[in-house]
Amino acid sequence: MAVKQLPSAILLLGPTASGKTDLALHLADQYPIDLISVDSALVFKDMNIGTAKPDAETLQRYPHALVDVITPEEIYSAARFREDALKAMAESAARGRIPLLVGGTMLYIKALLEGLSDLPKANAELRAEIDERAKQHGWPAIHEELAKLDPITAARLAPNDSQRIQRALEICLLSGRPASALCAEQEQQATPPYRFLSLALLPSDRAWLHERIALRFKLMLQQGFVQEVEALRAKYQLNAELPSMRCVGYRQAWEMLEGTLPAKELEERGIYATRQLAKRQITWLTNSIACEAFDCLQNNNADLIGRRVAEFLKA
View (cartoon, rainbow, N blue to C red):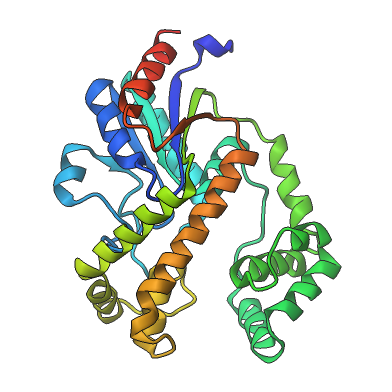
């Protein structure tokens, strides 16, 4: 199928706190757009404040697919995201509308655009064994173990990146193959049958973004973020290793409620973790995907991007 015959789709990507949501809502007012969330935290029900989830009134006016999909007790994988996103996109296109995927979870975008290799499912027993070894010897030692089995993956992971080290080692031990080799196979999968416009909001001044992150986290605390986490702990059977409680902010709040993080350090640690997340997102957007970049410090992005979308849809 020729590119111009493919249905259109738009990606609106960017680091946390870059203004993606407001811009997506503006575009939805201007064009026949269906919004699809690309956010690994927004999939969780009842996690509202700490995820900066749009409020109920906004979601009613501007429905988002893939928001409030599962409870915090459950796990939502990149493979499931790809399946759900492609379904939502197909339904949107069938209605003669334009799917707009907005968010900052880069693994989800990678899964959507490139597919996923057939990775082994999580194994609770093996993960517990890896965790126990990490408690005894430290994650740097587990990182060294991974380096012997999969030096390519180990080289791109920090020695204390426990979640990714654990998963990569788990894949190696379950499959008998390096995770990097399995992931490379995903590139052979067909890309989705859409004509994409890929847009990215990137800051020309990181200090500006850092300040926005700090202000937003402080506002979350004022809005009752800690109380939200307390309510989640009371309502659901949670633990610190669940993906929901590993989300930025929630991990730090959990540690504070467990007594391993002094309450006076929650704000500082939460802001720092969020800034580190933004740094990783910016690096990925800059190096791993071809996007038309717009400076999120500009005041006229709504007009600039609106015009670009109009050009794209007329092409």
